[in-house]
Structures are given as structure tokens and as C-alpha cells.
Length: 589
Image (cartoon, rainbow, N blue to C red; front, side, top):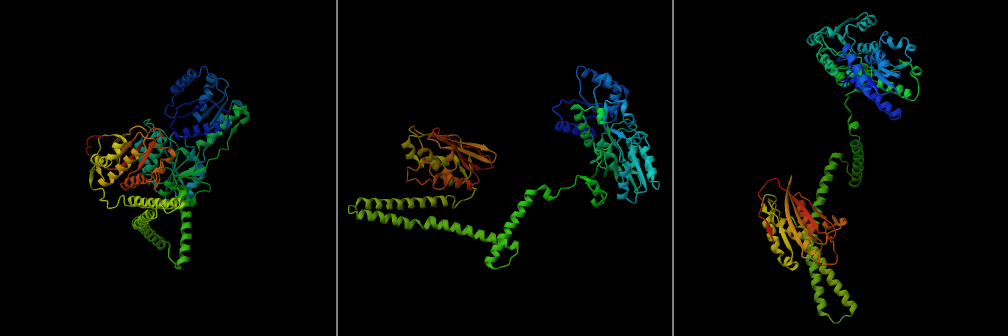
């Protein structure tokens, strides 16, 4: 069992629970852990303690614990009073028991009187925290302690350690919250505040740690230092702080030893739990305290991370990119014998890249257009030559001449197909015109009337929308997809279904056929230039789907296929179109 003095959600207790649990998971065999909360900070009367004891007695009447870990004084004192009655001779490990001028005497003065008890004490580093605060604020003339109860040990010790300073206390349980705020706001500017935990004011109003610490720090005109880590992050500058997680980890190690057979008397009571110096970056900035004045090894929370710590991949990527670019620039400087700055070189590279793209476009246009005539001439001349010498050549010569003619004709067809691909979106009118896709589909069906009749194809189209697209472009897409469905069919009459669905960014069209299907490995290849699924037909160039992709991508959409061999194919393409327009009537053929 892990028995806590305070409630779940109290930062100090949550830190202890995490420390105990993490340590037991790492050091002990799998264990079942029950976590209970005494909640004495909010319910501290004897009636609540008695009710809690009855609750535990009823809940665990038939259970036996191997070890109990108790956090903070109320839980330890509860077990001293009720352990035998509730749990028998179970060993107890404690943590978070306060030690300040003998305040832990009930467990540490005579350990032999309770051999079933071992643990780690919580030592308040009052003197070191105040010494540090005075180094950071050398103009200090007054130390103001803020905390609950009438315990004045802190004040007396501070007065002895610093006789030249004035020490006064704000007793939170003797004042209302408004009175606490007034007294804190009136603290002189040559002071520092030392804040210990408080959870109630005179009216018994309960405050969480975040509320009480934030209330004091927000109203204090001077820096506020603390004693416990659970106050850090809510407004205190920091100090040599008690760490609940460290307390819990130490207690967890002791509990693991007990589970492994070591008696508590052999473990004993430890006093060596270190309190690290910890600070809040935001408060250091608020009070203009430089990091150089902090003790070596200090922990600083909320400190902004460097760009490298946040983005190491980007930094190294930038370094490698810079090195690569520098090497490229050096090579270009050596080639051109010019000394340019990096910025001018990158600009020149961009201009050179633009010129190269322009030249490539011009080369593609020349290749596609100007090559047609000489190739056509070669084909025609070869055909005329064949006719004029037909019957005068042997079989091998006839075969070579036929091969030459076929190659010339094929090259001519390839160049024409390349022209179609290059000019697929030429003379575009942009996206301003609205086309009725149903009407455009009817035109495509009319253009393929003979092929449809020959294949005895049945074509059905659902309602189709009107969208921003050039009608001639969309008609070419319909025609090529219809050609594909009619060409790659099986022995049955083709069944072709055309539909459209509204998607977030526009419309998604689908052309589904009942043909031979496409293997998965060819899904992407069929959209390439001069790529065909079936190479038995040398008269087809394999450019239809490539032209479809070029047109669809011109409008910002994409095209893809879903298919299984022998089960037909379904081609999808999308056209972005944010406007919502009525769809056209269904078309069937």
C-alpha cells in the first residue's frame, strides 16, 4: 500500500507517488499497489481520521500487505496510531517526514522502539535558500516569511543567522485571504519573501498549492523564494527545494529491499536526501536575475530552448545544405572565374534554371512539331520505293524494306502522339468557363459511336455536374477513358458505368468497366508516356492515359485506377471546383 497524507492532485503528493511507482516497477518483481489518500490537508480533524481508519479496516479486512509506504507526517502518525489494529505487523517505509530542529523526533529519536519502521527524512534547507536569496538581492533589509500556523522556528533561526536584518512573519491562518493580500502588497521594496506551504486562511477557506502560491506571488512587490519543489512554476523564483520525486524514489528503493527480504531495522532512517537548487526562468527574467549568479548545477525550468534543441534535424539539414551550396558556388566561381556573393549566385542559378526550363520546352515543341514532316516524308518515300521495286527484290530485301516502312510509320505515329501530349492543355482558356460534363460526355459518346456499336457496349451515366473546365479538355479525357474501356474488354459486351461524387475540394468522377482488369504492378505505369498494358497492338502508342493525367493535373486534380485482373477496372479522376452547381440529367446508351 502507498498511503499518502494529502490528496490526489496535490503536486508534492503526486511527485512522491510517481517516484515510488517508477522505482518499484524498475527494481521489484511485479507487485500489486493500492494507493490511498488520507487527505489531511483538507480534512484534518480527529473525526476524519477515525472515519478513514474505519474505511481502511472495512476495505482491507481480508487483505495482507507485504509493505506500506507512507508519505508525509500525517500518514506516518496515522500508522503509528492504527497500524497494529488495521494491518498487523506489516513493515512501514516513510518519506516526506519533516525534520527541522527535532520535529521528526517521533520517528528518529529512538529507532529501536519501532523496528518495523524505516524511511527518509525531509530536511528543510532554510539557511541555504535565504543565503542564496541575499546574494541575489544584496539590497535586502527585511525577510518576510509567509506560511500557516504559529510555528516561529524559521523566524528565530533567520534572526540568529542574520542579526542585521529584520525578520517578520505573515501568519496565513490568522488572516483572511484579502488581509493576506493586503499585507503582502505592502511589503517594502528592500525585502525578500520566503514562502512555505499554506492551504487555509482564517475563514478555513481551502486553497490548492497553485492558488496559494500564485496568490502571494502575484501581489508581492519583491521576489518570492520557496522551500518545496511543488511551489515551483506558480510564481516563486526558486531556492534549494525539497523534491517529492526524489523522496518517493528513495522510499521506493527501501520498499523494494523489504520486498526482497531486508527488514526495516537493517535499512534504518536516512538523512542524506539532497535538495537541488531549482529556479523558474520566467521569474528570473521578471526580477532581472542573471543565470551567472545561480549556483553551479542549478536546474532551471521553463527556460526557452535553443533553436538547435527544438529542431536539430533542420539545423543539420541546413548545415549540410549550406555546405553543398557552398561547394556548388565554388565550382561555379572557378568555372566562370567570377567572385560573387552567395545571394547573387543563388539568384543567377535561379535565372539559369528558368532559361533551361524554357529551352527544354522549346526543344520539346520543336521535336514534336518539326520532326513530323521529315519522318512523314521518309515513310511516304519508303512506301513509294517499295511500290516501284515490288517484285524485283528477294525475300530478305522485301522484309527489310517492310521493316523500314513500318518503323517510319510508327515513328510518325509516336511523334503525333507526342504532339498530342505536349499540346494537350495548349490554348487553354483557364478555369473561367463552365462546362456541363454530361453534355461533354454525350459529345464523346458520339465521337466513339462506331467503336461502341462494334463492341456492343452498354454505357450508363449517372447525373453529372457542371464545373469550371474547358470542354475540349474534358472531352479528350472522356474519349481516352472510353477507348481504354472498349479496347481492353473480354469476350462479353462491355458494361461501362460513369458517375460523379462531390468531395470537399471539388468533384470526383469514375469510369468503371467490366474488362480484363489491370495487375497491381501496372497501376502507375499505365499513366506513363508510351506505356501500354498490351503490346500486341503496335498501332496504339499508349498515350491516352498519359494525356488524361496531363489534362487532369493541369486543373489541379489527380487520376488513378483501382482494378483486379479479370474483374474490370475503375478509373477515378478529380477536378477541383469549389462552387456547388446543379447536376445534369442522367445519360444512358
